[in-house]
Every structure is written in C-alpha cells, then in structure tokens.
Length: 337
Ligand SMILES: [Fe+2]
Ligand SMILES: [Fe+2]
Image (cartoon, rainbow, N blue to C red; front, side):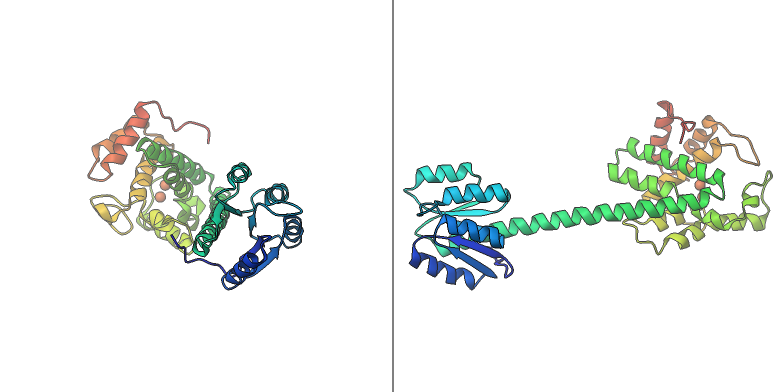
C-alpha cells in the first residue's frame, strides 16, 4: 500500500556505509521530505541524532566504527519513542532478530525498493499524526469540560446566593434526573449532561422577585405569567453559551407536556426533546415532594401517583416507568445534596 502523506516538514536521519547507495537514497528522500541528514556509520549517526533530533531514523545494520544495532540502542536510551526503520539484507537474520528485540518500527530489505521504504516512512508519519491529533483532541475536550463546569458553577451560584430554595430544588432535580437516566440505561455521558441541565434548569427564575417566589399563598394571574416566563428567560440566558448539547433548548422545554397543555409554547409529543421529558418528570416529582412556602409536601406517593396517572398523556411513559421503579427500589429525595 502506498500512502499519500510524504510530509515536507518531516526530518530524517539516514545512516548507511555504502556510499553509492547512500547518495542515491538521500536524493530520493530529499525530493520528498523536508530535511535529510546522512551519516556513514553508527558513531556519526549518533552524533547527528543528538545534534538535530530528527523525526525518523533509517539505518543499515552492518557498518564500521559503530554498527547500526549499537547506535539504535543508544538512540533509544536518549529517546525511547523515536521511530526507527532498519534496512537489512535477508542474510542478516541474526542481526534482524536483535533489531526486533530493540523494538524498531520498520524493516526494509536490501536491495532497497524505494516504494517499500516510502511506505514504511509514511506508515510512521501516519501514526505520529494521528497520535498528535488524538492528544490535542483529548486536551481540548478536557479544556471545554473545565470551561463548561466553570460556567455551570457560576450560574448555579448566581441563583443560590439569591434564592436558596430554588438552588436546593435544582440540585435535587439534577440528582433525580441523573438517576432516572441510569435506570433507563443511558451512557455515563448522557447522565452527566442531564445532571448539568438539572442544576440550572430554573435559572430563569433569577428574573422573578425573590419575595414572589417565597409568597405563602397562591400567585395572581400577572405573577403566574411572570413565573411561566422563567423558561424563556432561562433560554435567553443560556442560548449564547456554546455548550456541546442543547442546554438552552432543554431549559426552554422543561414545563412542556406531551398533550400540548404545558408552557410556554404548548409543544406536543415528539417536538419535546428527550432530555426535557426527563427533567420535567424529575421536576414534578421533586416539586410535589418538597415543602413550598404556600403548601406542605404532598408526599412521595402522591407525586408518583401524579406521574403514573398522566403517563403517556402528560409525561413520557418510559421516563415515568423508570422514575417509579427507582422509588420502588428505595430511592429518596432526602439524601444530603
Ligand atoms: Fe421550572
Ligand atoms: Fe424546576
């Protein structure tokens, strides 16, 4: 197989004692790669390696002054992961076995077929490139996760410092929504996502006067519409933050119901995204279970009865079943958060 890589910025050290072979191969490599250093024996090769630290080493085995195997051994001590290609004759079997034990990366038999050598070099470049991409991808993913956690913490703190009741509610909803996800067999990443949305799903309540949220009696119509607006406000707060999943939209939809009776947009069935269906069930159960300024707790049995009664009409059937199964198994909303 011939690889179309041949990167111009790759530097190569080529060590070979046969002068004609060395000269021919150097001009072949020069046309394809950035820098090619050449040496006539292992000692010279080692010196050039220490001085220039090339990306790849290609070396013969049998050479005067210092043979290729000794040079490879010393180079590996300096840089254990340096890619090395050995050029060797079929008759050099015993040296070849020693080269294998030194964990070299490729072998090309003499007389050298230039395409074979090019393939061996390109395989190494291909490996090095994907390794670099993998490392930078993992690092940028970690950086995004750190930024994301920072943004979420800041938002959760903003509401907590002003309205401890809603902060506690959000944390319990996040924990319950995550547990529902686990019960449904979601992946670890999906569970983490739902927990992230859970802790900020009511962030829009930041626009509601704290006294109104703490009122010990039912809200007036005008106050009710202000309260209902918290989904849209939450969406507006979050929509410009670049999350790797639709956090703002889930927040926007967390009071929607399958039959269209929810708010603020009266979305129906499949228009409501899956994560919003989970948050809405966790939200209803936690809200009914908790004491509110205007009423005592309804108790967990009543909360579960509510979601079971409206299974498939208001709430996603699968989510309801998972939530009910959790509490049947002893899940509690009283755990310390
Ligand atoms: Fe809400
Ligand atoms: Fe809520």
